[in-house]
Length: 516
Image 1 (spheres, one colour):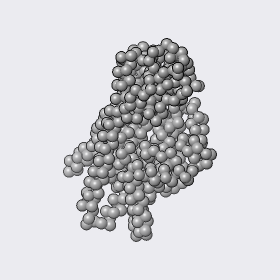
Image 2 (tube, rainbow, N blue to C red):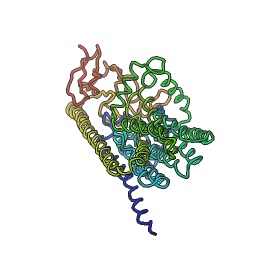
Image 3 (cartoon, one colour):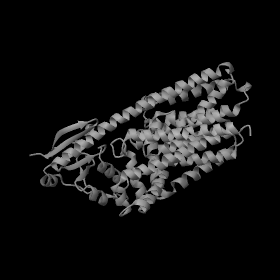
Image 4 (cartoon, rainbow, N blue to C red):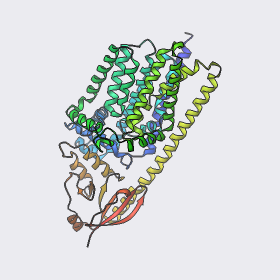
């Protein structure tokens, strides 16, 4: 009975991170704005319409992340919502109110992640104590990218939860569950996280270094493989395509399988590596600091009895460094979310080494370091929120400009990639959810937006069913044709006169006329 108050306060403390995660996601969702805005719809609308594709009886087309568990979750939410509140066919209902469906898929995904973070705290508390649990739960906030992406419908929303729980099992390996239980648990989480995004592939490295016997490593490898294939099973027909894509990416020097047929180009790789580190200074510093602590720990290993904790920290650092090395080939900080969400475990393990050697200074030093880390992370996240709000306002401005002109002049609208409009988001999602070269949602999109078309590049204009539109015929029947897209990809053609109407942020609005 004497431990009950402490037990209750501990459980209350562990609820803080899941609640804060929901608050962060809601704030970031507000900062990002609706999913149809230019910097949101890729990949949100791809996941939305690929989820519908699965419900229509086709395999998802967009499996190159591969992201299959998010497609599956989306399918469950969509079919449930349509059964409860939908009208007409399922595809027409989703095309008619895509933002409502995206909102609820995202809400269920973020609630799942909050539950995973809560589970991570409970597992760590049981094996390493409350301080370790709270630090492990802090993982999603140690990276600005990870915290910011909580506000969008994309795999990183779920990865923040699976990676945090993965790091909890790492720390739990120091306790009674060391051995086959942690091997299987780590394997399941690794396989599922890789099926969410291949950027989680470095998570394979850590358990192979952590586990002490080849029997445990084999259990981990088998569990990882089984979990991956089970998570991928809703899209099993696309497994050969996914494998070929991965081979192409691995065998070419550029991003996503482009560039020369070599593993990497040193002229671009090393500058990209340093750019990747600079883009996220706090997590990069934590990885570097953890590596230094591990090196110091190795120097005193003969007199140190905490060999399992030292091994655990080394395995985590190796995982995170491998993630940096791998991601520099296609440098974007959001690919580091799986590795960076494990950094909470680094903090506790590095602190374990330092605490044992600086007993008199441990409280003030730890407090100062914690405050500095929290303040720095909060400052960067608030700055990112402000940036998103400013960009959101610019993109709303572009959309309103088009709406005003269309309302006054009854214009036909041609949209291009990264244009802030719901029809562009649906058109792009339609393109990424095709089956055997045929987009599946052209009819309901055309019914909802009959006076729009899509430029696939260089003014190759197609309708919602992806049929070519003759520009001469279009100009012959329409007295006003507007074009909206990124300023950097301003339309250009010898057959068309392009007149700039206005600009908002990175988007431009143009009037198209035939050459006289």
